[in-house]
Length: 115
Length: 114
Image (cartoon, rainbow over all chains, first blue to last red; front, side, top):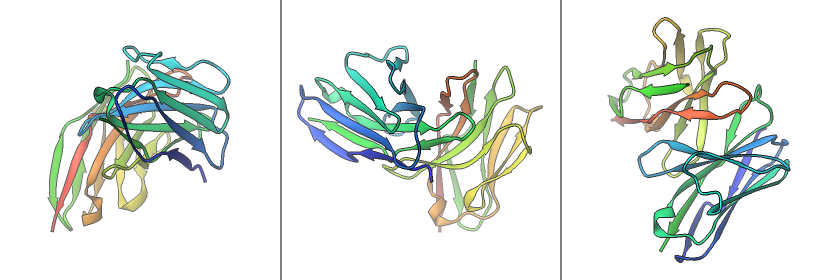
């Protein structure tokens, strides 16, 4: 149990376009989902925390208008990179928790390349 | 504030020899600590977690870690490395309160030589 599906696994887009990444909890209801960004050979940096039905909480330095997060249901959160630029190219990973005592489940990540 | 420091960015071992990946943490309260493994271009897999129960935690694939409060350490060990263990390993601490946020260490790349 506790599977998180992240889609797409890889995406290449043109500069100036927007890209949507989906994160779904397949067999549990996720009270909270997290979005991380990982640059090559670096650690994961938390971008934002999203709770179902409420606005996401962004970490300092993360542009909320550029990285739109929607947590419309207990099983789905989406991250939209708006007006993408090459510097947005990165590995994006989502994580979901059922509750704090249960543990964290990570998606398999999305490799975004902006050309 | 909570933080974790992984003391080695890169560790190289021979297959069949022991593995030691070091992690020190900083926390103003009793922390929850985790070790995750990440294979190239993949998500993260939980190896083990410490949540104030037994100080010696056994995880998957033969890994274990010992929580040492006096040393503020949570080192990851495995008696005998396998080629499939080659990956990136992250030591992680949970943030206090009910946010559920995690703080990741810088990561340690484990290389296993035949």
